[in-house]
Length: 313
Length: 284
Image (cartoon, rainbow over all chains, first blue to last red; front, side, top):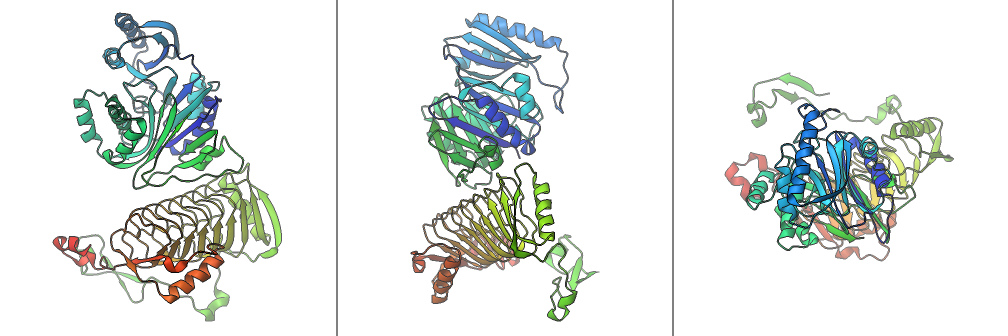
């Protein structure tokens, strides 16, 4: 069934890493297989942050095939070579697990071509590229993933996250949420629901040059919105269009470097509870997610069917 | 208890192999005989004293622990219980089968006060999905908003939300009354079979979709009607009933109920299954 959570502080930064962890941990019963964070952090905004993986987590109930860890080094070297070939200058690199990396880099060219080249290396997937977006996803619950990647101290303005119960695809990082809105920097999506016209849409979008990394239906939302925005639509226009373009039941969140949005399908079949004040918007699949960061008595509500909302920082 | 016997295939469902047994004699319903009242025992129900009051802070309890504590207090005769810090926890106050004043000082999560038969409940906050599902009797008042499936499959009692509610309010309703002071989402009254729903504000699309029976009153705009839901003229008895009921619900002091829209089942779907596939489209 999956659980999603998101929050946006308007006009200030906060400890979005620890706040989102609490919200997602409260939703663990909705999705124990994997957890993902898209944190919009207080970076200096000069360099791109690229998060990528060179293999899968093969423990913790993973459905991935086991690999010798030596292939990770080999793939990382290929990525490094490709980066210098593409003219990207790596300022800082961190290895967070044997299979995942965070690079701070300078790059001034087309991100779509850049991503295609990097991902042409076997088993390499870019999880995100952005100047404030830090996209982290792995197997395990929210606390496990947060501890593994040191997310507790991350400060920022907004964040979205996902606790996944694997249904239509495997227990692996590539099928975990959030999904990056390739090829747009700083765009991420999380989804709760099922999309029934996934393959029809995927075929159309692939013919237009868009890329899919998994067979998870939720990835379609990120690609769908990215394609709309590539053709000049605003985020809100793309989201409103998705209410008819996507078939199935869904509640999803999308975040950009300065905004956070939600959309709910016309059947209102998937839950969402929303709290909105002048300086904070918090939302989640269940109220307990919001209560985990706002224990005092507050006014919350369920958005109606077919509703789309976008907030700016 | 109905007798189950294996018999020759007779009905359409049986000929499709869905089941082989048939019901004979009386139906499965078991009727209560007042002459045997002294033999009637409602397991899990308690005699409580409304004047005996206590508070219960559930901040550090999970729902099982909280419900067990409520049960213990009722067994000790407490008839008024105030729950502090519910903080959106799921399934609080479920399965209460006796009279009780139950007050929640805060919001509930999913399935709050489900399967109850008799208590008077007030929630000074919001409730999540499926509040009061399967309620048999009693009165539940929500001071703020409610999530989807509000009053799903209730059989009796009064369920009142002073704010707005989500989608599928009164889905599969089999009796009782649901009153909403604000707006309601899509599929309100979906497959309802009996009872009444009163929405003082607007409702979303597919109102009363596939309803078998029952009545829905709407004060505001209707997104669209569902299959077989039709408008019906308001009568004096409708107006009198609405005035009386809204007063009980502490709502609509200056609300003109005569301008509400009354929606009932067109009942064209009743014989739907007997039609040939080519005829079905015409029935709707």
